[in-house]
Length: 387
Ligand SMILES: *[C@@H]1O[C@H](CO)[C@@H](O)[C@H](O)[C@H]1NC(C)=O
Image (cartoon, rainbow, N blue to C red):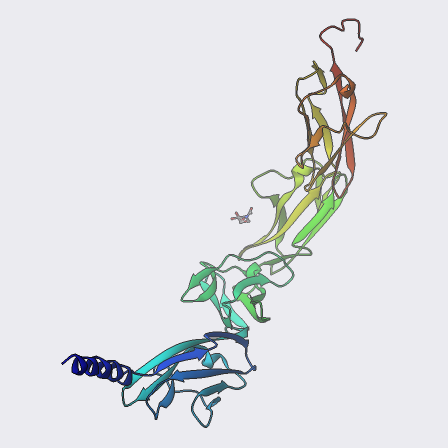
C-alpha cells in the first residue's frame, strides 16, 4: 500500500511535468533602431514535449510586412531595412501538444520628420479668414514651428488634430509673404514653404518695411523705411505701439528717423499706408542695447568686527550683466568674502582688516561701469580711528 502511494505521487509528478506548455522567451525584449537598419529577435523555447511549432505575429493582429523574415526553424525573426510601419509589438507563440505560450518584444523605429503643408501659393482676399495647417510625421514625435521668411520670430499656432495651424481671422495685405513650417526631432529635420498672397480691391494699399527686426546701440541714429503700393498713392504715417513716437523723430518720404535713441525707445513701430480703398500696416521691432550703469547699495557701511557685511551691486542696462568685485589697492578680496551672480558681496564675520573701498564692475556686451562702496570697521575699543 505504501509503495503504491509512492508510485502514484511519482506518476502525478511526471504527469504534471509532461503536461506543461512550452516556456518561451524573446531576446531582445526591446530594440530601437533607425529607419533602414536591421534587427533580429530570437525566440527561445524550453519544452519537454516535442515537436514545438513557433509562430511570429504582431500583437495588433496585422500581417507582418514583407521585410520581416522568419528563419528556417522559426526561432529567429529578422526585420531588414526597417520602415516606420515595422514599429510596434511582436509576439512569438510556441505551440505543442501540451498547450501554447508566448512572449512579446517591442521594436521602435526612429525616422526623420516629414512636413505636410498646403501647396502654395495661397491666393486670398483681404478680410478673408485664413488657416494654414502643417502636420508632421516622424519618430520621436517632432516639434513643429511656423516662421515667416525674413523673421526669426516663432508664430503662434493652434494645434488641431495633430496639425499646427496658423490662423488669421481676417487676413490683411501685409500678411502676404512666405511662411515656413519646420519639424525637428533628434533624427533630422524637414521644412516646407507656403506663399500667401493677399489681394485687396484694385488700388488698395500694401505697406512694407525694409527691416522687421533691428537691434541698435544707445545713442545711435536709426532710420526705418516704409514703402507702399496702391492707387491713388497711399499716405504713409508712422506710430509706435502703445506709446507716442520718441520726441527726437522726423518723418520724410515714408522714412522715420530717430536720433540719439535710448532704452525707452525700444518697441514696435508701425507704418500705416492709407488711401481711399483702405489701409495697410507693416511693423519694425527695435531693441536698443545699453551699456550698464552700476551703483552700490549701500555705498558706505560702518561695521564692528564680527558683524556681517552685505553690499548689493545694482546695474541698469541690456542683459546679461556680469558683476566682478575687487578691493581697491589690494585687488583680491578677503578670503572669507563671497560673491553671487546677481552682484552681491558678502562677508559673514568681518575683521578689522576687511575695511577699505570695494569696487564692483558691471559688464555687458556693450560696455562696463564701476561703482564703489566704502567699508569702515570700528573695533569696540578703538575710538581714535579715522574714516
Ligand atoms: C491705420 O490707419 C487706419 C485708417 O486711417 C486706422 O483705422 C488704423 O487704426 C491705423 N493703424 C494704426 C496702427 O494707427
